[in-house]
Length: 217
Image 1 (cartoon, rainbow, N blue to C red):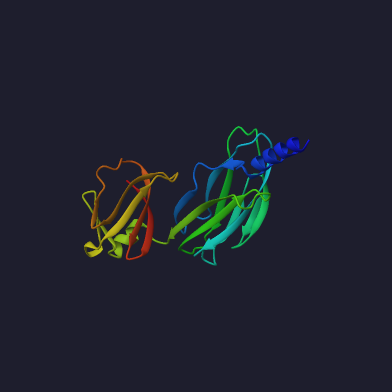
Image 2 (cartoon, rainbow, N blue to C red):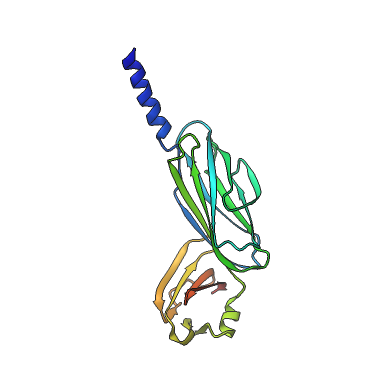
């Protein structure tokens, strides 16, 4: 009997400490301008067990402007507004046709900024086993024409030149967030190899300042 109890205890311990879910992507970057509000995106969460599971999330805000209103939807519960340090339980569902989504939203209230919302996701029965995901918001009030007018960039013959030849990092994303091209610490970027007739979200970092704009090439 003692051996049976010991085996049962070991099996229970293994299953109680096992991860019951996983995510394929742990981070998402939303590059927007202030007129693209509300800003939404998601990370999919996949159940690794055959039953619905109660999970818990807890937030950490980093440099999120006070003027932004952040909301969160787990597809089992919706939170119209959340704050730094908030926490709540939700149900990870099984038997869905598509993976369940953890959906972030931000009302930008005409306020530019660059901040990150982190979520610690875990089973409240095993709080030491944590999966952290993050949503980074890069929000600018500027478009490409404003950047050109301010002398931050110049565009000539499909080449982007950066102000006074200063070393700049630049990245191009599709509208669904896929990274298309990037260069770090360069004085110019040749756009000729980027497919035309597409819309790009462009992130530009110069002297620790981040600019972003939508560009239809």
